[in-house]
Length: 107
Image 1 (tube, rainbow, N blue to C red):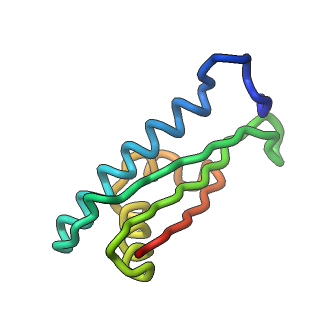
Image 2 (cartoon, rainbow, N blue to C red):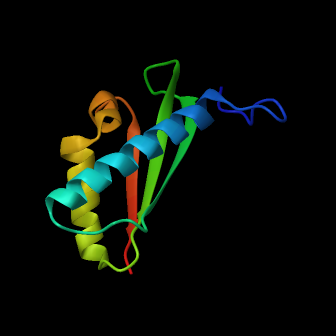
Image 3 (tube, one colour):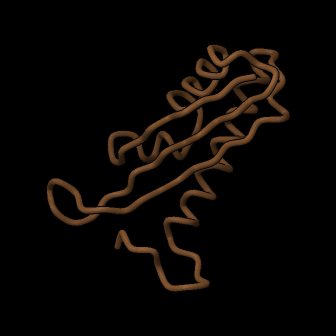
């Protein structure tokens, strides 16, 4: 819990991060399509960590990084926020249960 895991193994944090990033990326494409924006060059990277919770036990923290070349950062922020707040099923499932940070980069 919160350590590096065993050498040459995949941790549950790795799997969660990969799943969340894939889901968020698909949801971002959906939102962009609805707004007639092209995010085909987007990259979504999710980093997770596990650590002690204030109330005891352990909790998950997520940092989601969204990069979309060719779209101004302010527009990427809007797309990513809508994705997180309204569309992504992982975001719905975890809202209020994990620490979540969103970083965006446009181009």
